Image (cartoon, rainbow over all chains, first blue to last red; front, side, top):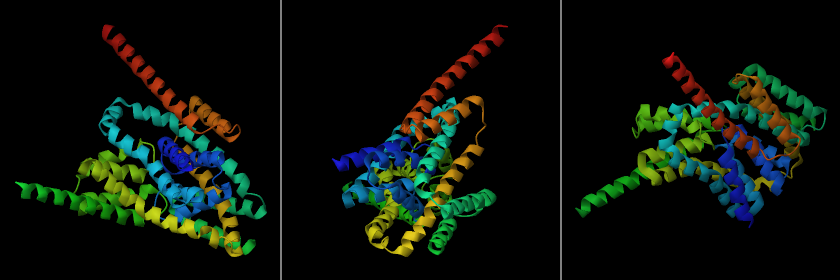
Length: 173
Length: 202
């Protein structure tokens, strides 16, 4: 049963993750809260690890959470679950996509999805932030990271910030 | 006749394994975001191996971004499918996914053991707020690409409040956005057709 739940949960995550990367976070978080496979703090840990390891966050989360929930079989099932919708949609829609693009439907879709995704991401950050930002040190680290990102945008790779934050954690805690 | 068929078959199989190997290599060296994979895939699939034309590759990029799921996975499936059908898609997807599966599995197995050390615990206590900042920043960057209008602001606020404070499943705002986009698009198309008819009759 747990394997089926894992598969279905990650199938949903793969199915609704429009726009890649961070949009997965609110979706995964929802399933974690619903199923209680691991704590939200550990979820933050896996996001950090995902930045430093190969692979998209969808697969990394699937493998890790699946393992926590049900060992190797869980890891396998969750990972397969998250890629199945991609398989189905890419193969089924490959002919259709060109037509949809011509019709301009995709533009309308992205138009409405983008603000929704921003809302979802901020909401997820708010919920998950409550487990992570709990004292002055964490507030300072969080603000510092945000300011650095704001100033340097994509020129700084998250890996460096994560490592720096880890070192700061070791020093100040 | 049979020898020809066997020759074809083994050619197909070696193509599949070659694609798997290429994707495995690319998957192994792309850290963090999947978008970094795109130039690597282009170099390998178009320039090095000549499996697909540059023109066709470029047209898959935009197509792939409108399908849900990880860009890296979608792209590899698209390419694999275009080059060698469903088996192609399976081999490419496997190639891209396997490195992260293996690495994360090893990390997961060692995780609880190694997270007993106080130094590690403290490191992660520092890392978590950093990740929260990363997430917020990702949202902020997305928001800068948007041409904010009243209805889009409403969409943002609603999905924020519903999922943030009322714990509604994020799939509902996403589904609603898809539905509204569908209706909106057809309403626009209809309006355009009517306007065109007006100008031609006038």
